Amino acid sequence: MHNSSTSWGWLSKSYHWVIALLILVIVPVGFVMTATYQFKIDPANVVGARMETIHVWLSRIHQTAGLVVLMLVTLRLGWRLSSPGPGVPATLAAYQRVLAKLNHAFLYALLFAIPLSGWAAMSAFGEAPTYFFWLEGLPNLVPKVALTAQYGYSFYAGIHRYGIYTGGALLSLHIIAALWHQFVVKDSVLRRMWPLAN
Ligand code: HEM
Ligand code: HEM
Image (tube, rainbow, N blue to C red):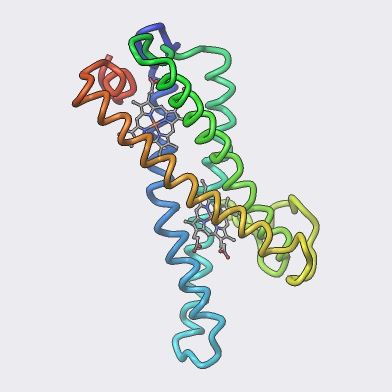
């Protein structure tokens, strides 16, 4: 279960891959959810009413999975601090080690900032519940304010959206780095995070 100086334990691996799988679901659902909202609010659109049900279900899936990521990343970081991982390989150049650590730190920061800003956007909007499994209406993270207010829906939705774009760029670098370790450097970096490998 514990991490060692050569590999990640099963708990850290589970956190990493469960969160990665959840994000694989959350992101496309998020884009489709936003698109169904555009249909729903267009009065000229005859499918608007049917879109309402679809939009609510996509929102329920998106928000529930996003809040589960928020809980898992909190546990994951706690575990990471109490059981240190193998660390960035000493064979890398100093600048590469710094880049790897920075990228991981920003990914962690975004795993908090993205769901929190989504929850804050729903709270500021205040006209629709925040969903969590069967629950409708989690406590508000920020007060409900008018749509036109400075720190209203658009402000938090903007953080959410730019967080996603930044996350997409950092994640691409992260995946390229993992493949580079595996196929170019041929070290143990990908293997030690791989689900069933030692
Ligand atoms: C790791 C967690 C999350 C990820 C990766 C994520 C990702 C996304 C994506 C890709 C979109 C579509 C963006 C667009 O159309 O411009 C979106 C939209 C949205 N998400 Fe999330 N989301 C997460 C968590 C949450 C949570 C927990 C909530 C609320 C409780 C939430 C609320 C929203 C809202 C309100 C929008 C519409 C924003 C807009 O108007 O542009 N999200 N999200
Ligand atoms: C949404 C998807 C992902 C997120 C948010 C994510 C995030 C992270 C973070 C924050 C770490 C640092 C762990 C720590 O030091 O505590 C990490 C490690 C790692 N990730 Fe990902 N990751 C994702 C997907 C992937 C994918 C698709 C791959 C493989 C292609 C991958 C390969 C790795 C490897 C090999 C490590 C270990 C690095 C090391 O031992 O130094 N990750 N990931």
